[in-house]
Amino acid sequence: MTSCHGELRARILGPSDIFVKSGSEITMVCVIQQGPHELGTVFWYKGNTLVEPVAQENDIHSGDRGRITIETDWTDALTSRLKIKRAVQGDTGNYTCVPTMARSASVCAHVISGEHPAAMQHNGAATVSRRAVWRSMCMLLLLHLATQVLYLSLHRSGGPSIILRRPSSHRLAGGPCTPGGTRIVAIVLPTQPS
Image 1 (cartoon, rainbow, N blue to C red):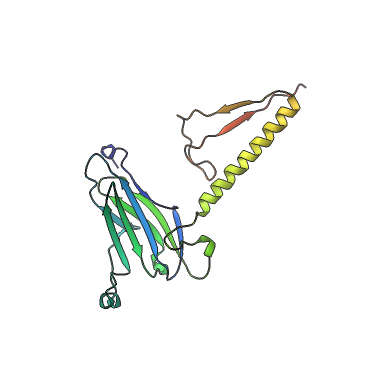
Image 2 (cartoon, one colour):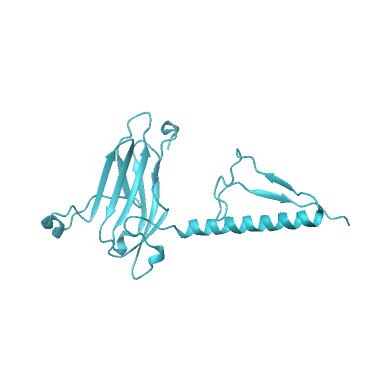
């Protein structure tokens, strides 16, 4: 997007990967905070295809609003909800919330046949994604290792080690264990005399 949108950007609530059991409901919520001008409207895409509300024949007769619905609310923020009832394998894919006046946001939905309860969305509340768990575990491991190295260096040298911190103004390229903006701590050990 161009700079005319400034800091206006969409945000999809929950993890970037959601997992649901086949036959369950998928709910994706996109929020755009109020900007200095009208926020326009929101479109949802699955891949490159526009998502449109769909009613099946039996839904029309039963008064049900349809298997796929999009609800938009205007309050202090623009909120758009994409709901997919009775999810099927064909609903698996990358969904993007595309506002007319803000940057888009995406989420990947996975419809799973069978039982995988630890990875599924239940009653509209998504569980933590594998990527987030992996990132947290890596950060905990790095913290533990840094603590051990610092502890050993203090006891061996009898003095404090030097701890360097990357200035917060410098950004890092994200990786599986170092998402962009994460502070990296480097520990410099005193050299042992030869």
